[in-house]
Length: 250
Image 1 (cartoon, rainbow, N blue to C red):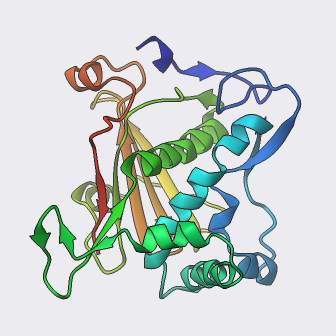
Image 2: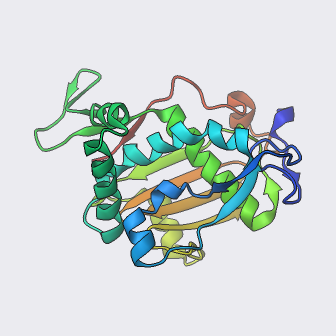
C-alpha cells in the first residue's frame, strides 16, 4: 500500500506520474478533448478547455485508451445536440477510414447473448473492456482532483463505477446524492461534460464523483481514500482485479 500515498504538489509536478516536470511536456486535456466535438467548438467558440501540463511521454501513453473510452460510450450519445455532434464526428472519421478497427471492435461489444443467457428481443447488452474503462475514468478523476486541490492521487487505485445509458434509471447512490442537494454542478460546458464530487469522512473518507456526458449518459465513480485501511481496501489493494468485467445497461 506504500504507492497509494497522496502527494500535495505544485503545478511543477506531473499529476500522472508525480515526478517533477521536465521537457518535453505537453498539455493534457481534462477531460479528453475528444469529448468536445469540433463542430460545437467552432459553433459556440469553446476555447476554455481545461488543460494540465504533463510529461509528453505520460500524455501519449493514454491516447489510445482515451479514444476507446470515448468510442465505447458514443453509441449511447444520441438525442442531444452534443451527443449527436460527437456521434456524427466519429462517423465522419469512420467514413474517411480513420479509427475503423476501433469502431468495429466497439460495435462488436453489443451482445444479445451474455454468458449463455439470451436477452429479450428488445434488450441488448453493451460489454466494455472493464479495466481499460476503469483506468481512463480514474485518470479523469485524478486530473480534476489535481485541478481543484493540487493533490496528486495514487496512479493505481481501485474504484467502483457505474454507467447508465439514456432512458435507464440511474443508480440509487446517484439519486440519493442528487436529492440531497449537496452537489455543485461543475464544468465550463455542462451540456457536453458536467460533473460533481464530494467526500464523506464518515464512510472511510469515501470519494464520490458523478458525471453527465453529452447531456445523456451518467457515469459515477466511488473509492475509499488512499489512506484507508478497511478490510476491502487491504484485501483488494491498489489495482482493479483482472477478473472484473463491465457492462452498460441498454
